[in-house]
Image (cartoon, rainbow, N blue to C red; front, top):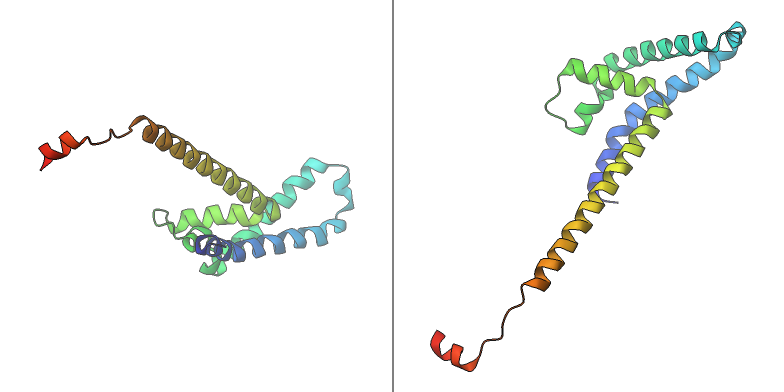
Length: 142
C-alpha cells in the first residue's frame, strides 16, 4: 500500500468511526418509536435530523474529527470544514461508501488518462524514427 493511500485511510478513520457510532446509535434507539412505521418518511426525516445533530456535536467537540483538515486541504475555512464533515459523519457508513466509490471513480479516470498518455507517446515515438547516419554525413559532422 502506498504512503498516500495509508495517509488517506488514516485521515478517514476517525470521521468514519464517528459516523459508524452515530449509525449504530440511531439503529439501537429505532425500536423505541414503533409509531414511525406508519409514517416512514417522517421517521427518515427525524433520524436524519438526529444524525446531523449528533454529528455536529461530535465534530465541534474535537478538531480531530475535521475531515478536510485531516486531509490537508488548505483552502477551506474552519466553518466549511465543520459543516461538510458533519454531513459526512451524519451519513454513517453510507457516506463512507459514497466517498470510496468516488475515490474509485477518480482512480479509474486517472488510470485511463495515464493509458491514453502512454498510447500517445508510443504513437509519437513510432512516427519520429531517426534516419541512420551515413558515413558521408559523419564526415561532415566532424
